[in-house]
Length: 161
Image 1 (cartoon, rainbow, N blue to C red):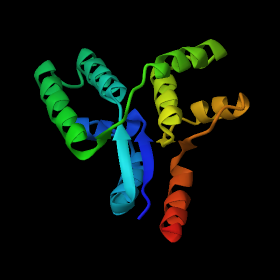
Image 2: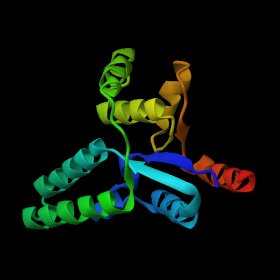
Image 3: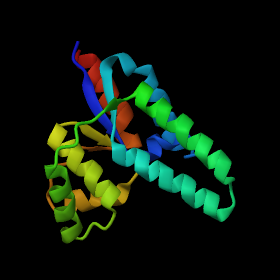
């Protein structure tokens, strides 16, 4: 049975850290769970770093306490590392991320995740329409899948296996 490989954007990692990401992301996570036998789902160490920065921002705002942020960081990181596969992070990802930045895309986390997806030949599931528009506008390799295309992609993949 053929497996489809998907790297998750941090929005899909955040629920493991107790962060509400909205119904669209939650619905995608349910679809992934329903098809987990046909998928290899990846995370990056950069997802974990970005998730920690979200917790820090929330603690600085007073939305959660520092002790709670610490516990959420531990539980979330353990959950992600236990449930998902870690993607290979070749050094060329960093130069490719810088190239994207130089082309005008200023979110380095997105740039690194895009580079990792293309270098590892996997899909990148994201809510970030701006990233997808940037990739299309610049004629770059497009590994992006969005919530609106995920259901169709999973359905087509199931029919082809």
